[in-house]
Each structure stands twice: as C-alpha cells, then as structure tokens.
Amino acid sequence: MSHRHARVHDRSVILQRAPLLSVWQSLAVRALAVLLLVGIALAGHWVDRAGLKDNVDGEISFIDVVYFTAITVTTVGYGDIVPVTPQSRMFDTFVVTPIRIFVWLIFLGTAYNFILRNSWDKIRTRMMRDKLTGHMILCGFGAGGEFAARELIRSGTAPDQIVVVDPQADRVDLALSLGLIAIQGDATSNQTLDAANIACASSVLVSTSRDDAAALVVLSARQLNPHVVISASVRAQENEDLIHQAGATFILNPVRLGGQMLARSATARQAVEYMADLASADGRVMMRERVATQAEIGMRLNALSTGLGTRIVRGGQSIGFWEGDKTIIQPGDVLVEIVAQT
Image (cartoon, rainbow, N blue to C red):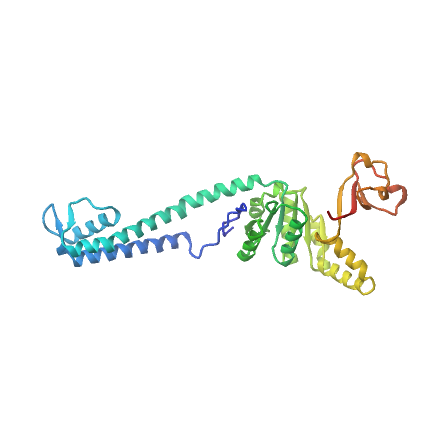
C-alpha cells in the first residue's frame, strides 16, 4: 500500500504517495547533505584558521578545526576555541549559523519522517479502520467506479461510508476530493481488503478494468467475508458464470445492458427514458427495496400506499405484481417498489 499506504483519510483519509527513493536512499541523501554543509563550514574554518584562537594550547591544528566545526555546527560552542578576527566572526554569523539551522532541520525532518510520522500514520489508520462498519467498498475507481460513487452520494450515502480501493494515485486523489475514504493498493490482495475492514462492510462493488481482475477481487472478498453482498461489473458475457461461481451476489454486464437499452430506444423511446429515470438518483422516480412493515402483512402488493409495488422477494424467489394470490404480503417479505423522489 502506498501514498499513505492503505489509507484511511478521514475526510481525513491519510494518504501517502509511494516515495521516489527507498528509506535507505533517502537517509543516504540526507546524510550527504549534512556532510556537504559541514564540509563547507570545515573548509571555511581551515582557510581562515588564523582567525581562530585556542584557549587551551594556543595552537590551531586540523583536528582543532574539525572539532571546532563540529561543535559550532551542532551547538553554540564551548569557548575553548573562539573566532577572534572580524572576518572569522562574520563567517560564523552568516555561513555557519545558517548551516547549523539547516542541519538541525534535516535531523528533525528525518526523525519526523521515519519515526514520528510513520508511527502516527499507523495509529491513525488503525483508528479510522476500527470506525468503519456497515460501509461500502468500491474496488476500482475508473469511469464506472467514479460514476457509481457519485450515484451513491446523490442517493444519500455519506461519503465517509464509501471506501475506494485503486492502485493508481490520481484516482485515489480524485476519490479523496469527493470526500471518500481511499486506499491505494491492489484490491485482489487480502491485506488491502483487510485494511478496508471488509469484515464489517455491508457491500463490495467491483468495477475493475479487466474481468480476470474482477474475478480475483470477488474471490478474495468472499473469502474474507462470506456474507457480504458483492456486486461486480463484467464486460464479457462468457465470464458472468465465472464471476458468479467466484462468489458475486449480483453481476452487471454494462455492455449487454447498454445494447439492450439501445435496441429498445428504437421502438420504445419513452420506456427507455423512464428506465433511465429509475436508474438515476437525480430522476423524478426511483426504485427501492425494503422489508415489509407489520401493517402491510396480508395486503396485496398493488395496494401499497408508499409507492408502486413491482416485486416481492420471498425466500430468495422473486414474485411479480401479476402473480395473483402470491402477491399477498407475508412476514419477512422484501418489497421492490417505485416511489417518487422527494
């Protein structure tokens, strides 16, 4: 995981880009910078060693210059060796003092980057992860994934209840700009899905660019959470059974669906517009599903007062509004209805 490796950014998701240099390379660069700055101070002191006074033995050797440079760069000195000429004092004031500041900034930056920040990121990520429950995990934030996220938000889902997983930093940045939680990583990895707290997720939406990747994501998600609802977008019809066997609850083929809508539009334009209206969170009507209330038990599906009943889901079986006595609502039924947008 990178750019804030696996990350939970709370509207505020902690994001961390993959560094250009490894840890050891970064440390080497910082060490070289310190040596370069100290070398500049050492060279200046050696060239102007006549302007220094040793209060111990009166002699300024190369070892004395090295010692004086190290002490002056890291502290304000002990007074055993001091600059006595105006030129030496000006060098210490306008060259060595800035070098001292830069060296300390490098030391502090190194401590922050490799100790404090990494520790804080781990603590913060753990805190954010533990707060995630009942959330949705969106694997893949290309065009389809982004549109799905925007639809969820328009439908009333809180942005901080959507966790985006994508390997590309620019897509992660886009997700963060929408207020979503984001993880830069491979959704086929158990470690990545575990970072998204899949064990407590309500659903997983898979919108990868390849069907084989989608199958691996579904397999990993189903292994980590046997009960989570998994919806997957599949491009090739022959892969639908494969994705289903991998554990997907619902499979959507945008190519086939788009072709069907395109064909219907030739002879039933108004019907197609109505279906598009139903599918969009911005439409005048919407289709929703809910559990039947106690007051509705014994009623027929077409007698609902909340909307236009279209289907009952009972024991995993779907019952259409035209199926006569089967449409009498029973306890535990899930109702699918069309309601007006409020």
